[in-house]
Image 1: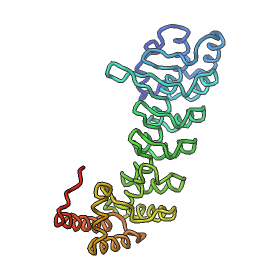
Image 2: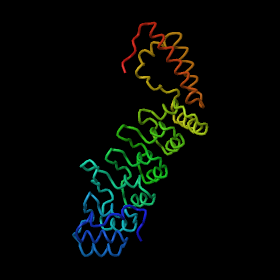
Image 3: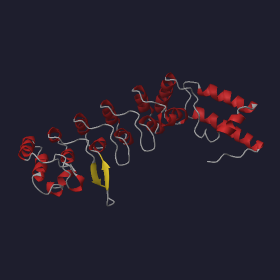
Image 4: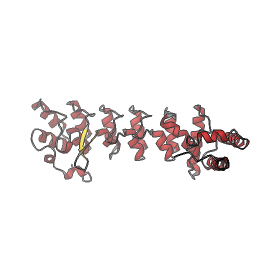
Length: 297
């Protein structure tokens, strides 16, 4: 029975596999007819189970697109490779290289992702943007998929093309509940230039329940050895000037005050940034008095 809401049924097998025996395999996949698949591969022992049809569609991709897990399993049994790169049209006249697992991470059913992983798909493959599947799950806010990938061996500290981990990305998005989850699973807060601790310290959520998770993350980070306060955003630019300022009586007083405030386990967000901003304002006034130019961006 055709899945009426599945757009793959708008396309005939001939569009991708115009000639037999590949066409016969595509038709058997559409019917999810495993005995027919077995018979076809027995009849055609030289038929490549990783054959790339039109528009880069492989037999395994065709089976996945139909949501036919039985056919996917049968194809892998006949040596179809779940880690074979896919070369798919990108709408710009060229092709992009990705993997079926990346597609399944953003696809319609958890069971299809689980099936691919159980069939040996590498949970750490990257898509055409060099983004690993784990980060794609984070990007679409699908934390069930994120956990599925982790349970199947995905690298919890994998980074996207900008060097951001899942934990750092979630912290930047104020999803501290999931940050806490990842840290408890062993995510390294030091990756992504320590941004997990920075966002934990600075982000102003404005939501009491979410802020409680932010505070829990601060507690967990402190237990892992993070010394709060951590250097604030933009600290590197003003490092030399701030070092000199904090050697003055005024600057030293601010440093002591900020260190005491940041060390408090429940101080995050506005409670911290309000005082840090006041300290920066005082420092810039001192720089102006001393004739110290603003450092370049």
